[in-house]
Every structure is written in structure tokens, then in C-alpha cells.
Length: 407
Image (cartoon, rainbow, N blue to C red; front, side, top):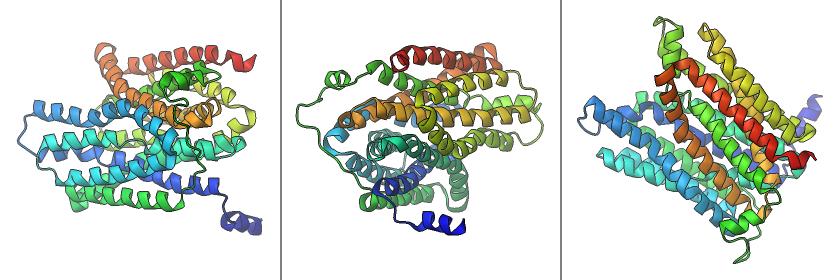
């Protein structure tokens, strides 16, 4: 048993397996870079001038949303270039660009420079989507669910640990040095991706599937592609709609007693822990029983978990249900990526995954807006109920769009 384990650990890896190792680390660092600066961003803005509370909230809102807005717009353009020049090139562009931009954020002298760099950060987006596209095209089809499920855990783990690392670095070295360190980590990702990621890329011939219309016509089941893009947005909406009200909901459940910020941080992190544990295993299960089936199970499971969240009586119940939501995310996210890869030609995979990133960015913008609006009008519990309804509608759309695959 031990001998077999050693053979598996130290055997020479196939190129597609090596890609997963390197890109897992890359997505981990990218996820960490995105999330580690968030806990102190507003505090950093406050050091760049003398602002009233209203002004600080305004500038913080613009700074937070700028990257997502630009990402939603430019991702399809980078995806088109990825199909013509290769996904590895886009990975190198994104990692080097983010390294420079995030490092430069430590040099700003006013808030408008910071906002401008956040916009430019959105321009250099695409590491995650192109890592997914490269893994999807380079991995054997029978292992695509496992490969993409493993890759999901990298970004999730980075997002989970990022705020903790960012807070620690900022407290130890200050805000500006934290940006320099983050930029340095992304520079390491650039060199690792350059040296150790392998891609067998065949460029798309000039004029072939060049326009969006041509790409859509190349799909055997275009309604499935559209359905998966919408599903990505819904998953992100569901996760992000809770962000504005989570700490307030926790405070309500604690009746204002105890360390609200600590408990809210733990409750926020729980789904990420569950996703890290479950995603690779559920990816393997999807390869075995069918991706469509595993995604349907994920939809139903999410609906059954979101609705009870509206009626919890303490933070333990909320934390337990949040863990289950992490499992539903682990069911759905790799399955969406796998269905996108299976139902799009290799020559258009970069474009498709860039669209997926755009829809994810839109979910990150729309989700908090829905959460804030619904909670303001109907209370915190209504956010979970409305999210469950949205997921249920998405399930109906998914079943309708994939009926041709089941016939």
C-alpha cells in the first residue's frame, strides 16, 4: 500500500497532469490576490485623502466594482484572441499584467489613481478563464470533470485564505508593502506558467469562426452553452447576494452579543472549505454518472439548502447550511465548466470560457445589488428565499435546454 502510494506521488506526470499542478498554484495565487486586498481596501482609500463617510463609501463602491465591470466587457475580446494565439499566451498576459498593476497600487498618491488601476486590473483579467480553457482542452475527456473540479479548488482556496493573509500582511508591513508582495507572488506565477505549462495549440485559421455569429453557429447545442453561461451568473448571484447582509444577519442571530466580525468571517469562509473538500470528488462522480445528472442534483440540493437559511434560529444552523452550500457549489461549478468544454469545439474554447468569465463578473455586480435591495424591502430572510427561487428557475431552464441530450 505504502509502496503504491509512493509510486503515485513520485511518478513522472503526464503533460496534462503537470498543467493542473502548475495552474492550480496559479489560480490559488490569483484567487488570493483578488481577495487579500479587499479587507483593507476601504482603509487604504481613507489614507489617500480626507473624506467624509459618504465620500468614503462612494469611492469604496467604485473601487470595488471597477474591476468586475471592465472584466465583463473585455473578457470576450481576450477570449477571441486566445482562440487565435493560444490560451497559454493569455495566461502569461494576465499574470504579468496583474503583477504590474497590483504592485503599482502600492505607489498611488490619490484615490483616482487607485480607481484607474482597478479599471486596468479588469483589462488584465483572464487568468482563471484561460486556465480553465487550457485544462479543458488539454485533459482527456474522460478526466475532464476531475481536472476542472481540482482546478476549482485552487481559486476557492485562494479566495478563502486571501483575506486572512491580506489582513496579516497589512497589519505587519502596512498597506503599500502588501500590494508589492502580492505583485511579487503573481510574478512568480507568470514564470511558473511560462516554464512549466504545456499547450498543444492549433491556431484558428484566419476568417474561421472569427465573429461571434460564426462561433455560435459552430455549436451543436447553442442553447446549452447559453444555459451554462446563465447558470454561472446565477451561481455567482446566489453567492454574492448574501455578501452585503451576512454580517448583519449574523449580528441579528447573535442578538448583538459576542464577536460578530469573527463569527461572520467564519460563516463566510465555511462554503469555501466545503468546496475545497468536495469539488475533486464530485468531479470524479460527474465523470462516472454524467455531468448533466450531477448538475441537476446540485441545483436541487442548492434549492433545498437556501430556503431553510431564511428560518435559522442561531449561527450554528446557518453555518451548517453554509457548509452544504459549499458542497452544492462544488457540484455545480466544475459541472458547468465541463459541459461548456464538451459542447464547444476546441477552436472556440477560449472564447466560450471568456464569456463564462463575463457572466461571472456580471453575477458579482448584480448579486450584491439584489441582496441589498431585497433585504432592505423585506428583511434578511427574504434574500435566501429569493435566491432559492432564482436557482429553481435556473433548474427549469437547464432541464429545458438539455432535453435534447436526454432524448
